[in-house]
Image (tube, rainbow, N blue to C red; front, side):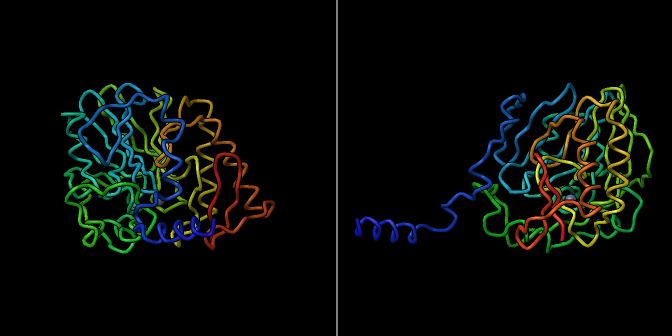
Amino acid sequence: MRNFFLTFLVLSFALPAHAEEPEWCRKLPRPAYAKLERVAIADNWFEVYKIRPGVFAIYEPHQFEEVISYLILGSDRALLFDTGMGIGNIKAVVDKLTHLPVIVLNSHTHNDHVGDNWRFENIYAMDTDFTRTSARGSRADAQAELASGSVCGALPAGFDAKDYSTKPFHVSHWLHDGETIALGGRTVKVIATPGHTPDAIALLDEKNGLLFTGDSFYLGPIYLYRPETDLDAYVASMQRLAALTPRLHLLLPSHNSPVADPSYLPKVLMAIQKVQRGEVKPVITDGKHEYVFEDFSFLMK
Ligand SMILES: [Zn+2]
C-alpha cells in the first residue's frame, strides 16, 4: 500500500503541470451546446454554431473566458459583434462564413472582446474616453489571459505567447446610444448599458426578438470588480434591459453559453438590487466577493 502511494506521488510530480487539465475545462462541453447546430470549420481554436438564420456564435472554448463573438448577417452587410481574444484568427473564420462587407462593433472594449479588431478595416465604436484608451492596445490584460490554468489544450500553431498583446485598432465610426445599423433585411439597435465598462452595449435585433447582452449578462460569474466598473450604472442598465423582456425571444451573451432565456433579465435585476441593498451575504472567491444566485453570480471587489 505504502509503495503504491509512493509510486503515485512520484508519478504525479513527474508529470508536467500542463498535462493536468484545468478544472473549468474538464466540465466542458457545457450542456447547452448539445442542442445547438454546429458549423464545421477548418480551425482548432474556434467553434462555430448557427443560433438562428444568419446568426453565428463564434466560441473560444480553449481559454477560460470562454468568450463568444457573434456574426450577424443582413442581405447587404454583416456585423461582427466582438472579435474575441486575438489568439486565433477570427477574420479567417468570418471570411469562410460570409462574403459580405463586415462592420465590427464591440460589446465593450475589454481585451477578450477586441483581440482581433486590428485585422478589420471598418470598426464602429462607442464614443467614450474608455473606448479611445482601449483602442491604443495593451499588453498586461492579454498576458494575464495566459496565466497557469487558463488554457485548455493546444494554443494555435504559430501563436507566440511571449508576444501576445491587444493590438491597437482604428475606429472608423463613433456611435451613440439608440443608433441603429441597417444590414439589409435586418436592423440592429445599439443600447448603451454602461456598468461593466463605460462603453458596454447590448445589441437589439427587435424584429427577431434577439438581444446580444455582451458582458452585462451571461450564465456564470458576471465580473463587476474592475476599476472601470460602475455598479450604480450597471443597475440602471439592467433596468433598461429587463424592461425589454416581453419583446424578446432569446438572449445571446458574450461568455460561456450563447443562448439564454430572456426571463433571466428581470431575475438579474432583482438580484443586483438585493446586493446593492446589502441583503445578500457574499462568499470569498479568489479574494473577491461573490454574490451567488441560481445560474449566475456577481463577482465584486
Ligand atoms: Zn468584459
